[in-house]
Image (cartoon, rainbow, N blue to C red; front, top):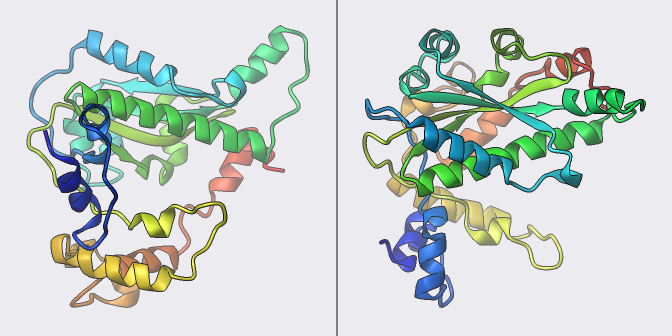
Amino acid sequence: MTDFDTAWRERFGDGVEHGAGPSGQEWSRIEGFLTHRSCRRFADRPVDEALLEALLACAQSAPSKSDLQQYSIVVIDDPALRGAMQTWASFDEWIAKAPYFLVFCGDLRRQRRIAEMRGYDHRNDNLDTFMNTAVDAGIALATFVAAAEAAGLGCCPISVVRNHIGEACDLLGLPDGVYPVAGLALGWPEQTAGVSMRLPPGAVVHRNRYRDDDLPALVAEYDTARHAVQPIAPHKQRHPDKYGVAEVCHWSENTARQMSVPERAGFADFLRKRGFSLS
């Protein structure tokens, strides 16, 4: 078992201090969350169907807004279907190699049908409901990941399904009111991946009131610490055709580059066509 101090420093770097930390029993129960790592290399070993069923039950046990349960999970075990999705992102070859690929979807359709079954008009095809469906799907995905990792499995969420949202809906037979939020590769890890360093809690956690006056200093410290252990390779730099390839590319530079170019510009129009008014 990794001790708390080691796990903390792997996650935030040596320069970010912490308090006394949890007790031994408390730490043993939450260690897996702080030491979480994405898995992109999977062993050639099947995942037992009984375990998958239990993990899906864990996902369905996640909190849900007003108990509406506005999400669906599509489990993909057809190699040809996974291969078709993998072609959308050639660098993500592990999509096709993972024993399972799941797609977590926001689902407005089920509650529409339930309203119709009960003789009511469904009058919440709005932006708030869209947000609720997305959050429900995200919480279910996070709960699935936590359960899978506790069982020794590896996972990696992937948003590329929204880059090809029309094709994804067609391939998976998603009707109006249902849309993909994120995919998730699942399998037994082939090797132990590294921990991705995160922003210091001071940049993310706020007490009583939001404040970010110290953000520039915190980001600068984070950039330096992260670059020392996780330098961004030239081929991982965002939009080199627009900005070139930097000799040293820090996290904040790379994310700023990414956010400077519109992504998925047609997403809102697609959702409107699928039955969300977004009003």
